[in-house]
Amino acid sequence: MVRRKLFRRTLVILVAVIGFLLSSIPPGEGFPDPLSLDMDSRDVSLKAIWADVKAYGAKGDGLADDGKAISAAVAAINKSGTGTLYFPPGEYRVFTGSYKGSLGGFSNINGLSLISNRATLTVDLSRKFRPGESYYGFTFDNCTNVFITGFVVRGPITDISSTAVNGVEFVRFRKGCSNIAMPYNKVSGMLSGVILSRLPSDPESYHVRNVNIGTLLVDHCYYGFNTQHTGRDVTINELVTDTIHRSYFVYGARNHKVNITSRNDYANDCYINAFNGYGCEDLWIKYTNTESTRSSDFANHVTIAWGDTIPATHRGIHLDVNIVYQPGQQSGASGIYLFKYDEQNKPDVKDRGHRLEDFTITGSIRGAPHHAGAFPVYTLPTCNWGDGDFWSNIRISDLKIINSKNSLFRLTSLVDTATITNLSSERPFMVKVNPRGKAIFINSDSTQFTESATDNSYHEYISCRITDNPSYRHAGGNGERNKRFTDTYYGSRYYPSGK
Image (cartoon, rainbow, N blue to C red; front, side):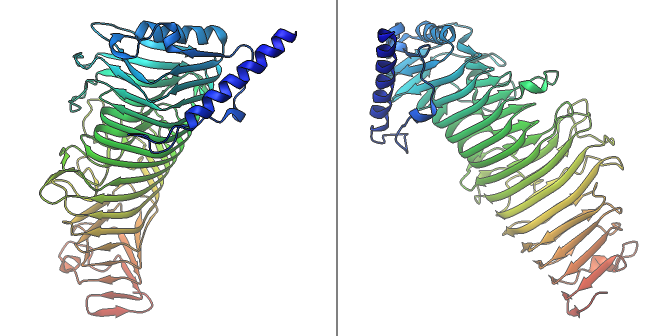
């Protein structure tokens, strides 16, 4: 009994001392904050092990393949049921030659830490992955209280244009993982930074929950952060991406608070999608993209989409955007883009019963997209939104569109009211509304608000300034019949109490 108590006390002291030493390291390159461990939140028991990968045969010299040694350390933690996988300073080379598999999978562990102390994990930089060839770094199944920090991960991926993604994922969480903390990690040249996954046929208990990411730096990767039919209660303080296929790609996500800073994105960058009937709910996204010079013409910066024909609902999506198109540069396509796919992965022309509810846009979009067919805010015109497709409670609030070309927003499936508040646009702003719905503009100022001559939707303007638009009086158009003006200047006329 005395020996057991002495061993327990020694283990606790050892772990605490190492945690103190790590937290005392001054910030270095790539580490904006000191690495720290909160030992009070960790349950250190007799079962817990400190698995130093060098103790299992890793060299950390950047030459030897350390994959087997790392896998052996992972296996020891799995056998224990709890513990810490520790990487001392060094470069740990993995996935050399034609190695296929993963570095290690953790299963059914409560209390798990992966700690890098100025260590670099390098996937063989000479390796060429075929399109569609992908492997796991670390996987986690039904693990709780997971702590991962300090990693600098490098891989060989340089071309992120292909849709057949390839390479090695850094971490993937599955089968009900919860309480995950990742204070600081940097990932480069990999398939992805962080993935949360679940199959649509999996039980509700398999949702990945309570994920807190401090700073995640991702460059030259396909995905920064990705959720698949899961992702409950996620906070990302800083997701910073550069030369990325997609920064934030989610479907089936719930209750996210995310701050994204992106540059040189290739495809739909902040991609909020629905698959297999799983839409997204309660997402608060702050998105910044102001420095891109190599974004492709496919790079719609924020996209709301329905990826198949199964009816799905997006609800409670709040976007705060700061997008700047650099003049004369490849700086991307539309700022905010909405569309739906059919069975052939083409724009859908049929009524599917998709829903968009409680959707808010705020922020600013400056400059003109490089792509001639792109707009600051845009819905794909080749998608037909039918009577079963239902959009409601759409709010554009304090959105500034500056130095742009014609701004376009089609609310063609709106069935109640879209409220546009404090909108300012130096160019004509078109809001096309389904005849079943109406658009209300409040405290908004534009050169002119306009819509097609055949649009018979209802628009109401309250405390606005609008340049006279001759199209209102075109033959066949709705003229001013479906307009109501209150405390509004319409051309040279002032309407004080409604017309």
